[in-house]
Image (cartoon, rainbow, N blue to C red; front, top):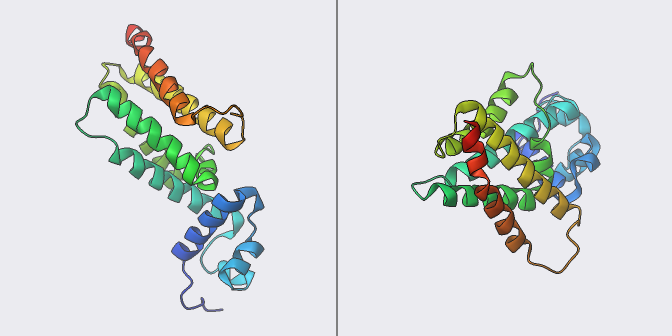
Length: 191
């Protein structure tokens, strides 16, 4: 069977990412994706390796998009302002791409070098920033873990409606990041 003209892997991935953002990845099936693309389900197999292959491609796409958004926030500004900008970019990505964001969180398959590399790129971006605080390698990695855990917790609670009080979430995020930054000396003492 020859591939349908106009249908390619990029179109499939972008459409699936949009559906995942709108409905959640757990609602996406190859049949629903095929309906959206107005093709028969078997046509998708000319471009992707089933649902697991699609999830892999979506994870790579999401990690690349998140990494690009973070890289754009790194510049010659003050190192604390860089952390604030990165935190906002991270949460903004989770807000605007909730389905895609969810796929970036899965532990990468240790046998998949491409997914491993994409995950490592995210950690490397953040580790480089934390080294500006005079943290040694292991301590910088601990700081990255704490930073990502904090941001993921905030993003997850927000997505699940866990912040029910009528307070500005961006103010909460700013306070959270400022609290994290005030704890940087704890990391520095560990280095």
